[in-house]
Length: 375
Image (cartoon, rainbow, N blue to C red; front, side, top):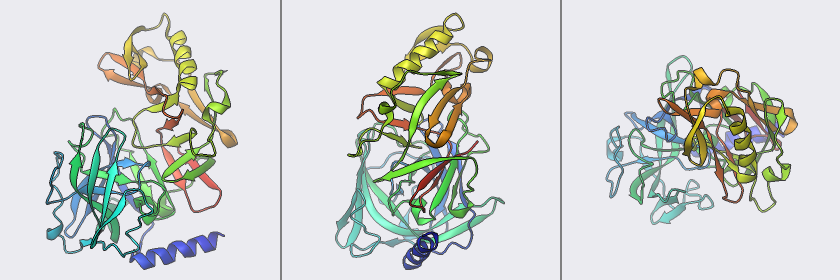
């Protein structure tokens, strides 16, 4: 099975004209200055043009803004200009790269196009293209991969401000074949520090065989573009919270369940899980720090994490196969303002879906999928 899968990967990449001369393909990662997400640092084109793209495991097509742009958001870096690149190519509608089974891919004859909508109401559209893409390596060198598929976005509608600033576009790490993660190999890993530490030096995104299988493993299910993992329970210190395992159960119709989403900066829990966790935190905080309000419906307290939460118990997410993800105070809380901190969790009623943001390694090659938690 392993050799067959490896052979399929090899043939598919040969058909697409993709040849990885190294398994050391990675991207530097920074936290967006407005704390809206994590940005992967790559370059596209010949000569290469730097891009800062929001990393999103919930989306598959990577895209960046391109000239000419009908309606574009303001970005710090120069907008990519396709005619100035010698390796830029539009994808025709009859190309295998114009896979209309992938959400948002359409034909704008004679060229392949895309139109994607996001949860905040933003809609982006443009053309599907191929381009030489340049990445970093572990020894601070660079490596380039030809003919990677990406979207050249030329129109944005109803952008409430989530896009812009440092951001040039989106880096799709979803499970569909067109994602950057799939084009570069069968596995990838990302490691984030804190969204509140934009220049944390150990942030990184690694593609292909360079994504080392270290740490403890649990099972991963892939449905559509999303990665689902099996969460059993949540504990605070030695106390297991009274949450029914059914709260986290993935239904056969694809609703509920627990997904990993690098595009979020908070962990979202169904109210049936969030409320017991919040109540336990409030009980532990009583008499230690002052409750001053809420942000994203999560409690906020007056004080400093480093000073006031010494000895606060570890919050643990207990996954299938005996995997525990331990969140210390800097992972479970964040400084909202210089003298106040909040829980980095929020409640959701959207199909009772749980969304987790953390440092993860994915392997999609095997039929039994495994996710690796990196510590």
